[in-house]
Amino acid sequence: MKRKVGVLISGRGSNMMSLVEAARDPACPYEVALVASDKPDAPGLTFARDSGIPTFALSPKGIGKPAYEAEIDQALRVAGVDVVALAGYMRLLSDDFVAKWRGRIVNIHPSLLPKYKGLDTHARAIEAGDAEAGCSVHIVTEELDAGEVLGQARVPILPGDTPESLAARVLVEEHRLYPRTLAEFVQR
Ligand code: GRF
Image (tube, rainbow, N blue to C red):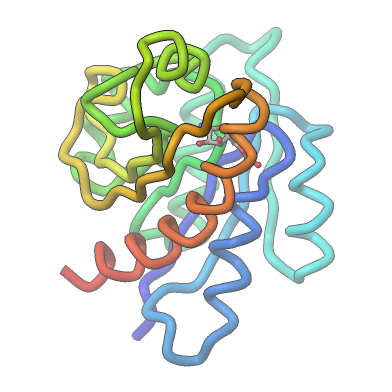
């Protein structure tokens, strides 16, 4: 039985696409059962719909975070989701939501955690003079970007790198790391 993954996105969803592409392999241990977004116009939703994946989109604006999260939770449960994968999801989940899905939410973060939690990771790595940057897949807990690291990929920082050029090279590695790490995670 394949494990069912619900992917939460806020934007272009390129990491979600890499998860969907990997799941086309019959040997992949997970399937993407739902793509949900807090941005009803997130470009990634179009890809999901075109791929025949159920989608759910709802903005918290106007209804408030508890009601919004209750709807997301309900959509995930109706879709039979076992594991929630955050992929460029730009909202902090409440402690209550994290507790409901304890140990079953993963995220991809564009730094070598525990370095550079939060935003502007690439600029901070360049500014610090680091020799390498990268990305991490980790379990989501109540504390931002602080849960168990499940996998990492490293990318050298090159002379003349800008946050944009570095982000582009890290993103290539994100697309490799996330499907591989998620496949391992759903089997453990
Ligand atoms: C990725 O760099 C991810 O690591 C970060 O936000 C970006 C999302 O990109 N959290 P996408 O929406 O998956 O294309």
